[in-house]
Length: 214
Length: 261
Ligand SMILES: Nc1ncnc2c1ncn2[C@@H]1O[C@H](COP(=O)(O)OP(=O)(O)O)[C@@H](O)[C@H]1O
Ligand SMILES: [Mg+2]
Image (cartoon, rainbow over all chains, first blue to last red; front, side):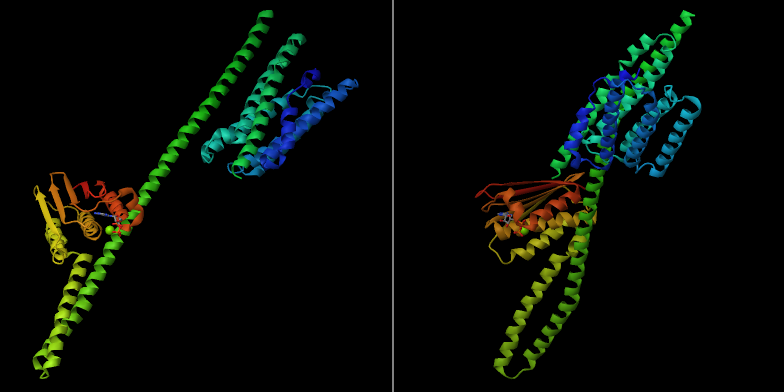
């Protein structure tokens, strides 16, 4: 089933742009870049695991907590004017503990850790909404389309709400028809592309801003 | 069995689709609300700025007036009193002195001193015209003209139409200062032979116009030159009035001010 995750994706687009423009990225955007690096690493690792015929479902049990940790760091930085970072770190600690508990007692490494994935996606959606709320609350940004994180945050919001929905849907369908579930999984990359394109746009805008301000 | 399965998945699909639609709508809503809030905030800020600027202007002008008043009263009370005293002594000296030469010198000094006293009185009145407060704008302008008239062969005329009414002293003094500046400008710069001042009162407004038949000037260029025209602008702003300058080189200049009473 994990084959579906490694459809050739656009993650290399923001990855390469991120490398080139790294010096223009602020701390928050560097966390986003870190996330993208992690995704690149994941894709390569999965290609290797699958091509060598190894099991790979276990990797999701490591992947989900790490992804959460990086997003928590990202949003702790972006939301610091709204929420004290320590609260977001606390959420991260709780989430990661729950993820470990889930792996140990409920969905072991032979199984798909759907519960934590769903909760994680929901939390990312909350973070993204909070970020928009912060913008609206502060009114500091003069032009939203010139703020890199607005693009990336929109991508995160769309991507993870889609994931949340598709996960639930495919988990339901899989009980009746694996083929149909696979079809549903094919929709995923579309949202992944959307996110990666928005992330690339965000990085490019960061450079443009840096050049305009000199 | 099959039917139940069907509704189950359809329900999730339905909710999910709705959720995504709501999300898309929410994002669009966010962008438009953000824009609106930003605009209203900018409007608010610019209003605050304008308000602040006006406040500042009013403060400067009113403290300027206060300072002038203080200076005028000092000049009148201290210097004026001293000069009168000196004049008295000179008069006594003139009377008592036997020496004809010294007597003449005293008389001559007294004559000069008279001029100085007149000048000081003129300056005092310029600085803080008591007539304005007591008798109003027309009298004050008239008096001001009588002070500037005496030296020149320049022709002045003051026309008043409508019934004179008194208005807010702060505004009265602003109109008076504007008239003063315009008359001074016409005397100083215009090389005119005739200066016409018109005051027109209606039930709601007062109009002031000052016209000279002098050499005229380029209004836009002149604005950067002197403080006078700038002060004029700010005083008009305080009055919430409006003004118009019309001038062409060699064709004289006309200034019109309109403000509510
Ligand atoms: N009535 C006028 N006729 C000709 N020139 C004028 C007249 N009023 C103003 N000006 C020109 O405009 C310039 C600016 O005037 P003003 O701001 O009152 O400054 P100031 O009187 O201190 O020179 C003057 O220097 C003069 O050249
Ligand atoms: Mg002047």
